[in-house]
Image (cartoon, rainbow, N blue to C red; front, side, top):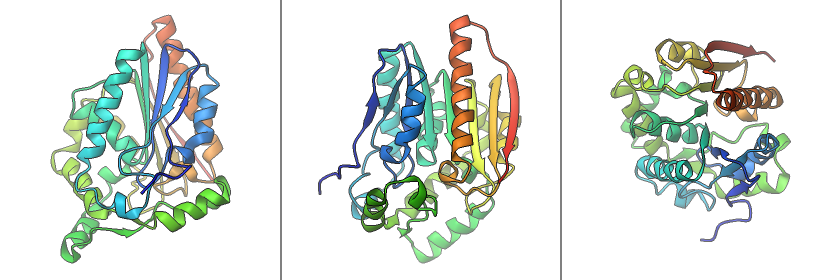
Length: 279
C-alpha cells in the first residue's frame, strides 16, 4: 500500500553546519511535529525529520514489525550519515524515536553533540512489569492505539486526525514491551551511565508508561555535565501533545540554543536543572 500525503520526510535546509534531526514516536509521522520542526529551523540550523520504517501506511504494516531493532538499526545508519555531513548533530526523539536515540548512545557506542528525549518514563515505570505479564499471558500482539490523545484534535488538522484514526487504530504492543523489558533487564543504570553528551529529558506525570520521578532518577546516574529536565504536570506519555506544548517548545529551543552557543564559544556548559510545568 502507498504512503499517504502526510507520510513524508520533512527537511528544512538553511545551509548550516548544524543539524537537528527529529525521530517521531510509534504510529506517528513527521507531520505531527511539523510546527516544532519549523520553529527549530528559525534558529538557522538544518532540520531533518525522517519517516521511521513501517510507518505512514496502516496498522497492518506497522504491526508486522517483529523487533524494535528495525528502528534502532535505521537510527544508527541515519545518524552516522548525518555525522559525516555536518559539524554538529543534535538529536531529538519522541517515545520510540527517543528510544532509538537512546539505543544509539548506550548500545551502539555512538555519541551526539546533544540529545533530547521525550517520553522516557517507560524504562522505570513499575506498571511496565504488569503490562509485560498481560502481553505474555494473553499473547497480545497489538492493542488499540493509545497514542492518539484529546489534544490531537486541537493541534492537528482534522483531515490528518481522521486519516490516523482510520488507518492507524492499532499498535504492536508485543514488540514494544519486549524492547522496554530488554532495556530494563539489561540494567538501565549501566546504560544511562554511558550518556555523556548534553541531554534534555521531558516527561509527563500521568499515564501508564510514565514515571513522574524518572527524570530525577536518571539524572543521578547520567554523567553528562549539562542536564535539563522538564516534568509536565498532568501530561501523559505523549507529553508533546499536551496543553503545555508551547511552553515545552520554548524550553526545547532554549536548550538547543544553549548547546549551539557553547559550541561556538568552545565553553563547556555544566548545569543540572529540573523544571516542573504546571497546568
